[in-house]
Image 1 (cartoon, helix red, strand yellow):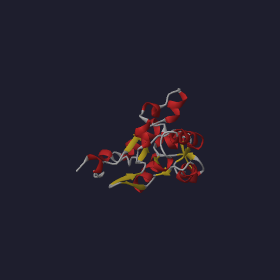
Image 2 (cartoon, helix red, strand yellow; image 1 turned 180 degrees about the vertical axis):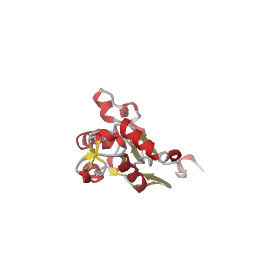
Image 3 (cartoon, one colour; image 1 turned 60 degrees about the horizontal axis):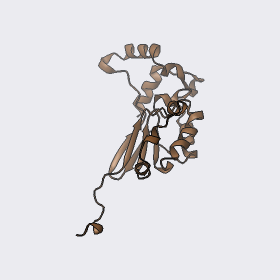
Image 4 (tube, one colour; image 1 turned 90 degrees about the vertical axis):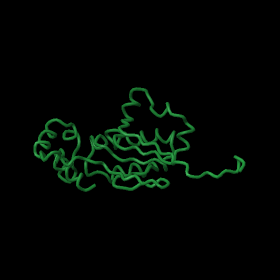
Length: 176
């Protein structure tokens, strides 16, 4: 069969998965991680999945970050799964607001969703810890509360906007 009559078959889907992007920090330093990528490759993506840490202060910074990404990738092909930093200066129980920001920008919010691209399924959720490693949950929770910034910078709306506790993230973990 002549090469110009060949059908496209069994070609892999083009999915770029990016974790811990922290786009706010890149842009604040005058650098753009997407600028280093081939524009043709980005335009041919079937999906861009950002899994965690697009930026902190999402109510302020996500709209700008999503506008920036839209310069490179069709927003309809972009999926956001929040990470712990995406809840900094926000609330652990504030996914509705994060979803709304995505919706306003034409981007997909993928918290507790299944994304299907071609024949591949991606199971998406922010996976917090249950602190049960080696049966030392109480020690882990106490240590995390003292040392991790998550328990200083993330709030819980339904408890009066107080700081989250390790028990809160353990509950979210069990809900994924």
